[in-house]
Image 1: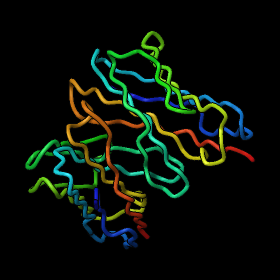
Image 2: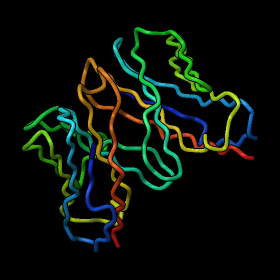
Image 3: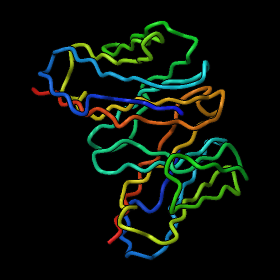
Length: 115
Length: 114
């Protein structure tokens, strides 16, 4: 069955430091989709990125970057030069889109950016 | 654009009471999902639907029921509320499911069962 593990429950870094959030997934499928979502203190859920299993290219969007490695079943998320506004809970999610349409989330990592 | 609308935003129930959480989307999305988020925890999938008339169980369906009579609406029913169902409930929709893109989430419904 599909599973997402975010081993880091909570991380605190000082503003302007770089920080990496880990995500390890398990799936039986060769076709699957990975996601990252952000939940700021206000509580809404904000989509950050979607990646399919056939695209292992790393992606950069401003200060955000994602490292997808099928060999280690990981989809890690790095924030460069962190800012206080990055403080949030970040969720990694997985869908075995070829098999069914469930989207399963990890437990999340709570990130504190200290001024 | 309204997007995904959930009602009510807050509700307190007594043990054994029933209620329905409403979810409506105006984006003509086929895929809809219900998640619960317990304090300090991640999102757990309760039920999901890939189109009108089709529903499927997620990770934690016990104690809940859903229906999908229209594309727009996906209500979640709690029949006999229990303290373990105290949580924040999120409804979400997607145009083509995980194959194409993101989930659009509602603002959440905070339910307390006493």
